[in-house]
Image 1: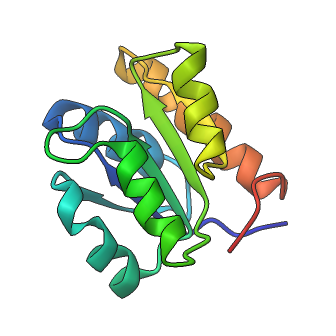
Image 2 (image 1 turned 180 degrees about the horizontal axis):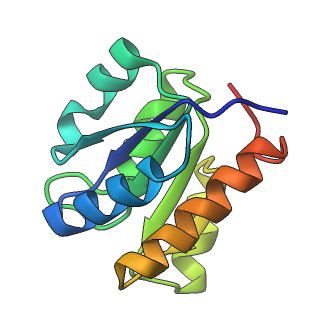
Length: 132
């Protein structure tokens, strides 16, 4: 069983970050860090070594696809779950082709965020999301 301890959430929307942090924090043993500036992600990942990244797709300056490409380009295999308001198949395909480990449609309510976080944590704890 994989142990999920540290989750780094990257999203430019403060409300989404707040809901996501609350949702993941509700699960015992999960520490949550967040980042709103995508250009700071690589430094944060190198320094903090999260067990999982939840990455928004649509962000200013550089999007989640670019962040994922940079992570994978430097050989970082930290599991990444892309989270987007877009459920378009072309976005899902692009995310998996870029090396993400999961793709979820962004929830709209705190209750939905909790359900999503619970599913991710349960999935991880069953050992179904690969570690790095």
